[in-house]
Image (cartoon, rainbow, N blue to C red):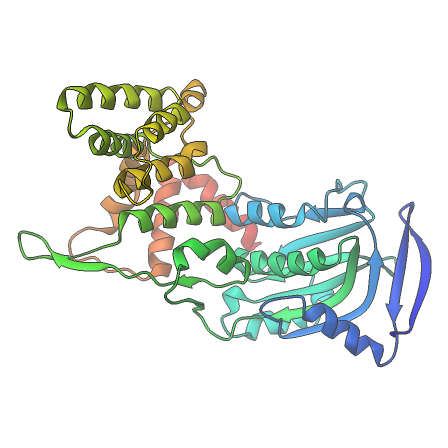
Length: 384
């Protein structure tokens, strides 16, 4: 059994119980914590484990809005729920160019020289008046910060109620990591939690009437992919299925169930579309299910449409969305993408690198949002 020494210290008016490992046991303690992370980080040293609670730990993120910050909050709020002013401990996130060099020490060099540095991150202990004050997660990019949060989340889930005093470094050896084959589009949340960043999907290759080559994914895969992408990268956003896309499914369902009765088909399609518009999706599901054959092998296409409505009904509350003056169709967003990106980046003969495209899109967003001067003032302030 590991030899441990316990002591009770007073920090900012809150009593913390701390357990420190000594001698050779420090290596086994570090290995135990390192083994809780998939994939394992490159290095991990643990000098102490502090008993605490979410009410004693604050989460501090950089200023600004970024979906990755929302993901970090979702991952770590269960372990760090205190306000900054009242918490004796904190988990702080900072980009390398804003973090205190003295606090990072050699970790700053690791971030600067690591392979695939945009995905690298380090976690180091923070000290206040010589006592443990929490952890600093530092990276070159917001993606690196998110990967650091995923690592901490895995560690803290394995042993709730403690905060390790550790030094950890990590970066991926391969630029792209992913799942090939299988149900990759349905596994996005699982893959993202383990810092994978590529999935494989097989497209159907064909050509149109003019002989131009085309590639397309099955509709079910596209829908599942879009849903999982949204839930993975924007977990706190309101997810809405495009109404007109949902109405196409309802129309197809009506045709499958009433194709032998053309007189009722159009009336039922209109009735179910109205139900959909008013948020009565469950009514459509119940009515359609009652018309299915008792033979589970029959009417497979109709069953698929009903399953689609069941899986997405929570994202089809169109009556609520309209009451909040929220768009229920994606046409406005699609038009904005064409105006914002397509008109600028898809002109004749244009070719872009990802870095170049991102840079010009940032400028175009600033101009079209009437924030061009603010954009440059912020960059100047960050440079200083």
